[in-house]
Image (cartoon, rainbow, N blue to C red; front, side, top):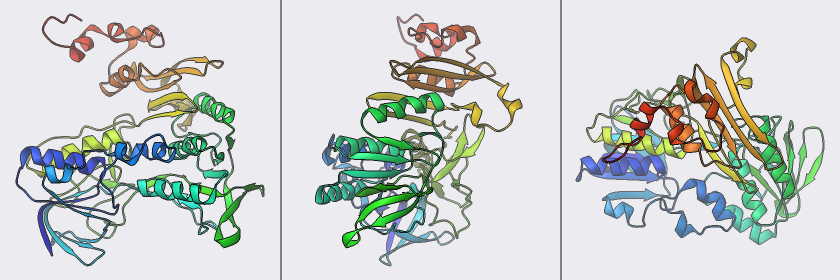
Length: 436
């Protein structure tokens, strides 16, 4: 049996930032970390670059190799917590080890959604959310000289793994159920820019369709897929990239309240005393939607982890909410989307009158700017081709600044700090000798 003051389940951004926050307030309290993954903490967004041979594992570390020792953290990697006794403050691992804790942080992240398809147990079918996934795909591609791959899902994960496979000279076909790739992130114009960029690399995008069956060949190896309407596509590799859901198995039969994710208050506390949650597993306040929902992005997870750790160690810090934000470079085209980018996806025609949309599109150069305004405030942006002003737009969204006076300048190439309202400039830039 183990005993610890702080138990942390998980080993990604939320967990690591929580450890740092705890140690800022409590230098001596024991910390015990359990993670299913066997490796040191790493930057999860880099797994596609690892697969595509752009970075090695050493460059993927999220913190230095000595991080756990430097912060006096006992780790148990490659093990899984399978049961929580909330009232007894006890966790049970898959090797029967019991852990008694005073305070707990659940930072278990998300789990890939894997549909039940005939042939899904074939050799050569993978998900792609962890470093171990990337290692397995990389080894399989090398061992079997894969030339063609099918990626099921045209969201962010699907697009990132596609980019990596293209870097490995593999011909990729993306199969997406929606009418366009990146439909949860982009509008039709931005999706079209990326789709045309992918086509130039030899990648095919099949939309409004889905895989009904995965075909097996010799030695149980995948050798193709069959689409809903019967089309067969030859391939030696299939990546399931349909989406990720908060990992709730551990708390599902406890008193901890869940909805789409673990429900937490503004202090990142769950409904159970002294139990906190942070990162992709939680449901927190969305500043744009005005209601709680999972927002699975690293900056939010890091901030939530820091706040949760502070409060676990006796602090009193609030998480005010986050916004959806995604940045991806595909086929040499940098893009970013923040907030609500496509009001057309909101049901009800009467709702559309509430929004004002500013946009500028240069199809030849794959340049696109879109700003969505509601009530005088920016609530969403899409940038493609040039994204250098993204930070300014994002700040305006987060701070809910009225941009009515500068609306005519929002899309200009020279839009910047001096374009903003004077009082907001003072809020952003202060210091001796600075005049804004």
